[in-house]
Length: 501
Ligand SMILES: [Zn+2]
Image (cartoon, rainbow, N blue to C red; front, side, top):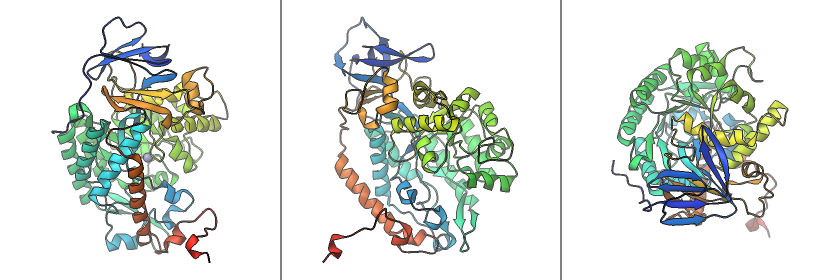
């Protein structure tokens, strides 16, 4: 590949701030008035009193310099949660394809140019939220079937342009849920199509692993367990083993999915994956909320133990789960069990800090205890947890030899409140938009909230126009084909100026 990221500054750079989250002996630690030095994309030193020469010094003042966040389920399209947020059930509101739509021939709701724009727009938004490693996720509800290698060529170009570290692979599937005219939900399979998409994904992975000076890595992204056949999962696992790259598969994320797998295979989702030889330390599994032992599953089982013992990681996305009335039960317990846990944003806003805050609240609510989880437990998951899930000891922590993926988080905003510990303040009052500067692989990809070459206001307007286009096409893909006004409710009665006398 010829993808090229922007040039790095030459020479050693030293950053200082009121706080530095460094790393030593396997744990983060806080250096008050700390310093970090990096050169050629790599951390050289952390701590105090760096003795060597540097070409540039930057002091960020009352701020936290910390590792960039690792987002294992990183929002990469125009999030459609808003369409369903107050418009349920999903099968009545265009989220699940009606059979009539399948028979008419599903089509891409966006053009190649629109999809390329969306990836770049999404990647820039991730950077604005301090995310330095991203594994993109997008909804396949709006696609003809899976994602295409072509759009991931565009995604690789966008990531390289922006300097974002990304694990890329088109989402693919062999099945899709449909709603019949009478409201029953069934699964329609097209295995040859899904296997051909897997072949394209393998080809993409071979061509892109290590591109743009190592910023771009490959992954496999079979979409969801309930849209996968056994053959697709077996072949995926074999290809991932051969190429030694991560595999992400949504499972244990809804009661409907859990019951579908149980009915079809006589096993729970983790039991079925285990029986296929699918599970291992390369597996990343969003969202792990519906499992044996949780309040939604009566059947006894060892779901979490199976995942843990295989070395697979749970991808925890508390914001999107909570919006669906779901939660991991509970984060403190999962950690105590020894499960590997990384974080994902998955929905809009792709604000990792907000996810950590919501996760902490949900964990304490589910546990019925304010001591179930502490701020550093969540901060660990968003940094070390994600990096370890990817088998990357050089990410998610700032210590000599690690990649220079660094964020600067301001503590001096009007809403910041008081500080007794910077991570506790971040988890209490922080926002993604308090991230002022982002450095990835030693490159300054955002400074003072400015990302070179990105016009945020123009991009937001373009995104809104594209989204309205999809909404206008919604009746074609909604059960019974009702008009838009019946699919999307409004909060209050709307009075329009042009209707007024
Ligand atoms: Zn997800």
